[in-house]
Length: 93
Image 1 (cartoon, rainbow, N blue to C red):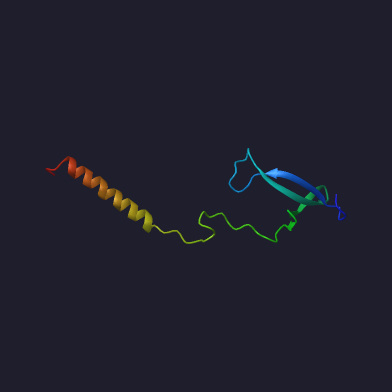
Image 2 (image 1 turned 90 degrees about the horizontal axis):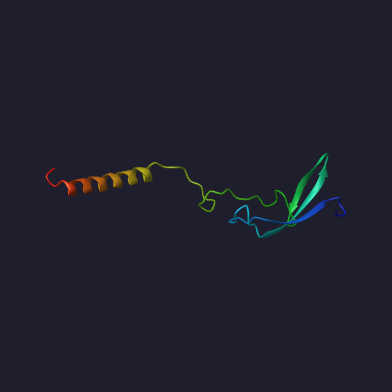
């Protein structure tokens, strides 16, 4: 417990690319008593909410609207490939 009555816990947790079973990231979390529970107030001395995590979009946070054009292009290419295969197997058609 700290002077502010905060409970400080040091733990090992998962990093961003680690599985649930095998975390290696060390963290220090501060909690304050809040009624019958504890409220997280800081992680590694950074106040909660001070540094929000960007959304996990798989494209470094850049968002864009979905488009059907890439799928249509892929399906068109697949149709051409299948048609070419069919013609090469049956040249009399």
